[in-house]
Length: 380
Length: 127
Ligand SMILES: Cc1ncc(COP(=O)(O)O)c(C=O)c1O
Ligand code: FES
Image (tube, each protein chain N blue to C red):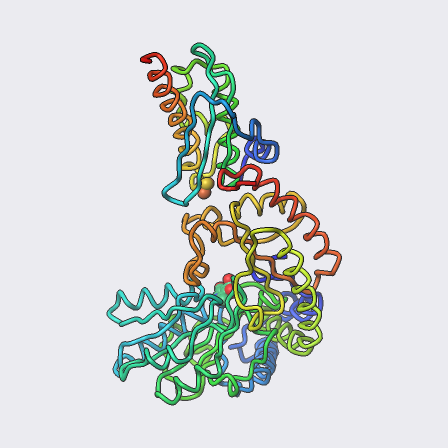
């Protein structure tokens, strides 16, 4: 139950990719048959993706994933538009691909505003409006958060940013294939996504770049992706991304309804454990996200126990981070270090059933009880 | 990432609990990740006869607490005092480098309990 981390490749997607690992190994830049067929596959994938986003095909740049998409969007727009201003706005709960890109630009002389979020992890459009300055060139706010699943009012923020004349990027890595993806409705100028989060392959993503937005490439070289991203294209990966996104968008309403029912059953069941709190919004929430804190226990020991029982999960605990700081998202939402320690994230997906949810609901209370019995903070 | 021995002590921790009439209690917190370890010791003559612990922390923290109770029981106070975090880690067949500070916590908790025991026994002998 860790589908926010990654998902398994769908068999249909694998099938669509296989020819490009085998007989169709052409380089899309070559003029002969193999090259032309690879070019056709790329063109068709680009048409599919742009169609699903309500964009035109030359507005899609294929990348190596969500991290590259965010880096290209942020650094690329910042560099190309620094004559217009040096101010960038983002939020405290972004993925590190966004946050660290912005912080790196700060070292290069850009000025940064990092907006706070409320207790449910939402960015207030009014705060974006207040933070905008005459020299603001870019605003980057994620579509939905990967840890707590809170969905941001992107369309509303986008309208404010557009009115002001700055560019707006959204990290849609957690929402592609899940929520509506029309770039017109979302009011975005840039949108990044990553195939491995919607049952596509790892290491491939796409960046939507609205016509007229200037962008410097991160990778210089050949003329691929209209000189915005050099390098021989990952044909099989791109074909797989397009196929996976197409399937996900087709099935999303039915699948979302199914996941929401499972999610709510899981949340309800976990909340029966004493001293437990849900993180994030109960309304503006991704269909597959469950995130709770159990007081008095630490997340990594929780994860190890779950793993021993065959359940894969994740935690925002300091002890799991490697860096020994708890999740910046939970802290930004106002949780104390101690509470953030006991966080557990379960993210559902296609292969999860009601029986899986009930199994977790049977195991977690026992694990919590066992760990609390060992905790010096727990007073019975 | 954890050795079998760490996982063994994590899944079957030895000596969890409290000692009501403990001779020394040590509680230490980990400034880096906010974890807490509490250790109770019982001393007979000069020998540590029982140790119990409670830990709020990661798998490595629980395993190091558990193993240090086994290492300390049967040792004299002076011997137990010389247990280093390196020895705790070795006893567990190694710890990932990001988890070495958890073994510090265990060694520090034992030191704190011994210190507490010394203070208490000094008082008793003085009165
Ligand atoms: C919100 C968000 N943005 C960006 C990324 C990075 O994507 P990728 O792993 O494709 O680089 C992730 C996934 O880890 C994510 O959840
Ligand atoms: S106690 Fe926090 S990492 Fe071990």
